[in-house]
Image (cartoon, rainbow, N blue to C red; front, side, top):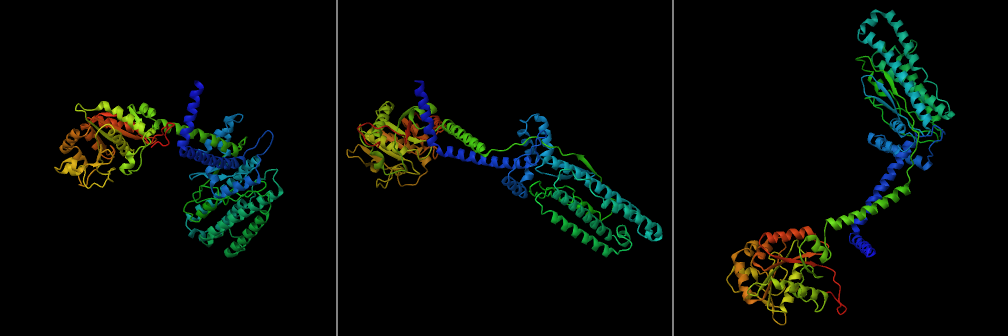
Length: 618
């Protein structure tokens, strides 16, 4: 028995998945899309983090293939690696490293190494950020620290050298230079020597272990940067006038000639740097800065040994020195050194996609179960009765988009549908009035539930046992209008003509008559709730044993509530797989709240098993 229940549940779940295959497919597609997105993101994060990760004990470097390097290059140039360095990403990446030995230390290392930052703080201004990323993590971190210290030294020396001429000549006015010519010349020579010594100073020694080509490029780049700075300072000084330019210009050269020679030196250094850059083992140390002194990662060049850094660290600051309103008080201080992480996490595409497929399947099954249980759409009579709490009179396969009345009533004799309608009629017999008449109002919670098909077939079944009247009380969208009648219910309610003038007989025995909705335009709710409708019900009770009223849905009109007040029973149609039990329950409560008596529900568009002797459900 237990095996049978499991089998039934499995079959039910399979059927539910088939019914809601769109939900299942959507969950799978969404999960696979998220899996691909995660794998792409993880791949880029790995490429960015692997560049700074190595095993200090073994000295092993992360294995980064040529394809991965190409992917990192394109991702970096597109600005996507910067996103990896954001705090939110940093926190998530930190969690991926906690599984490594001494996870807390690994997380602390990640704070500096994933972002690959060497901090240099000028006093009173935003921080300068230098980003260094290289596959050889120990070399990259060491290079970052060495060159941060180098440029800190250069900048502090240049700032101090510029401070004195500003104080001596700009604030004490330029006219004093002429009055103290001799002393001024001596002071100029001292400052020239001091400034040139600072600008011509070589950076600290290069770290050991670099390829010769990389060392040559670094030296050529450093020389280019220093000459470029010297040219910028000379141009800034020349902009202030002849006397001020003599701080940098030698006595035996004019200002223009000196600037020309500096430009030639810069061009020569640039050519030498570009020649060195042809080596595949070059570490590009181009440095960039903005006027706000906030350095940003501008480009990363993938090579056999290293990646790129930044360019022109002091460009914005030196351009600002042309104004000379106040001496440049900046003093760069190296805030912290770059730590190096100890582990590398490699994403696995097959695992990510496989997990996505599994999670998508589980999510789809959960969504199907939730849709089946909480949407509460019913596909069989027992399920509808259990979920709605309202008696189900039966189930019919009938329904459609308002075909002609003859198509509604001609259920094949002996078919499952015919037997189901007859069973519904028999259950309603107990609802007859004291005078033997029975008025049944057929409605539904929502439009297009099959109530016209239900009322037509119910009237046809009742006609086999006595005179029956089928009334089309759906005044806005009549379903029984193809009878060739010019007049109907609204014409009777609007005038004083006897109802018999508007009846049409549609069965061979003449026991089933139909009254269409009519041609007179009226306010349906007002007329159906009025005295004329009550009089009409009284009249037809005298002539017919059974009156079946096809009314509008409760969602489109409250007419069914008014009609149910005068009827012996109200029957609600509910479409299988579409109408939820809570909706049906609220519709029944609405009818009962208006004084009507709900006899039960009929499940429409249901699947019925046929007897061996019948060939069609209809």
